[in-house]
Length: 222
Image (cartoon, rainbow, N blue to C red; front, side, top):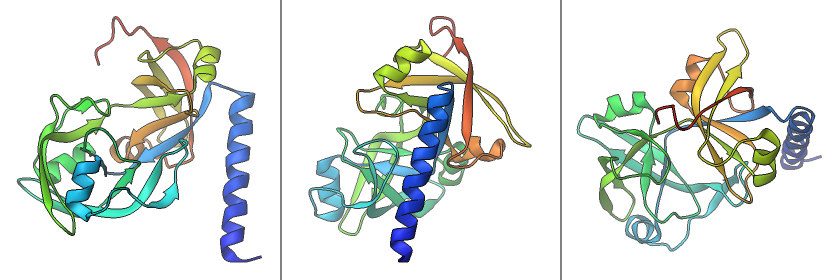
């Protein structure tokens, strides 16, 4: 069996096992850890790379979404990251998702907000092989969130934009509040944390969190 085939079999086996575990306990949801990355709209992609679509490096857990082959540099007043991966497909608005530590390195002020909610996002520059763009409202720190499909949300008794709480195990495990429930027809259950949050609790991609209680969206700050 070739190395590529073995890796594919291992990946399929892992995904099937993950899904079986989640089916046995729907409150137990797999974790995805998000490193810094960019989302680009089609116009900005053309400016930076001279192409009309990102190309797929690796599929991610959510259907139709992928890590792209393309990398950019991002620049702030104090520093830069020379190699930041783009995620596909293209979005309506370009944005740069950072951790709080990344923001200190770059010298940018970025709000904690949901993806696509860029009204208060900070200014940042993105450089590609063919050009540079400036986003006046593009730098953000992604709010903790959990992806669910409609059937998953119904089974858990939650709806889009509710706030929930998750417990994580391990030597440095703990409980984190204020995960925004995000529901979409083709999504599968997945918790998202950034690298700062995951590192603080000693967590990695593929670990699990357990939904332990619900928070009222009317009484909790977002």
